[in-house]
Length: 410
Image 1 (cartoon, rainbow, N blue to C red):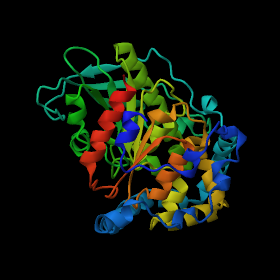
Image 2 (cartoon, one colour):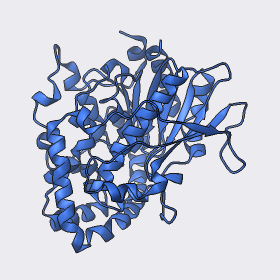
Image 3 (tube, rainbow, N blue to C red):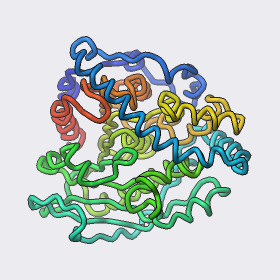
Image 4 (cartoon, helix red, strand yellow):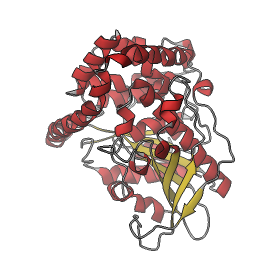
């Protein structure tokens, strides 16, 4: 048993992980959106930590539900105007069918178009109003003109009209002695602030351990959002399902450009981690990028439609949307499966994947974490007793992450 596997004391192996012999390829099995139960969004959750830390797990779960409702209200407010607009009904239905047909092919190379390898990345030192980690860490604010082109020609002009979104951005911590193994960190919905993510996920620990760190800004977040956006990430949800789908494809395209830049600069290895939506995109990158040294999705979003059906008031918004465009939950799943990591064969060896989940998480509950884990038989799984926002036991999983990354980057 490898050192990393032995170190994960709170891991579990799903039934899929226990299977011996070859694992069926994704294209040889029914698509996940057909096999997932219709009531998956409201099934019960439980982990091995529930009995061991009941107060931590159930107490943090209660707090998560309250916080979740606040976020769901923001997302619902951004989605509602378009969903109630009669002129968008037919085009939303057509857009969903466009992406559904692509999802059914389960051809990652066709969906995730490889970006050019000569994208010009420019950088500058932190300015007075920009976050600087201090402590002698050399930092650069990087950007490039994203080469991404939407897959759906019917939405291309509208999507690309958001000019600020077309500039990809990141904060890069480097070592004076030259490029090191690099951790790409991907934030969650709304939470784009470099200072927040650096502190919340103790990214300084990874830097001090010898890793360079690249914190990216996702589409429609921070400076990539429209100036009049009421909150960071608003653009993901305000323009319908097609824009949301293209935003996920856009994020993967940009991440691949960042990988090209890091490797061209001399990084010996590059891996990725992120929380929630960042965990989702981390897992998604691992189905198209065999160059990754490791992938560590943290509390990952896995099935967006089912996740939003479990929240209120987004459940009501999803019901309204489905009814107006004549699409049931299965059709919505199918229409958004084009960017799900469950839809494609993973490119990364499962021994290089470590999935982290909160036993009290009610944003991305344990059943979703297990779903992703089952998609990567024999990948590593670690539970902590906290929720989506308060990671009780974080010191333990940070230590395990560091050991895991060290092994993968050897």
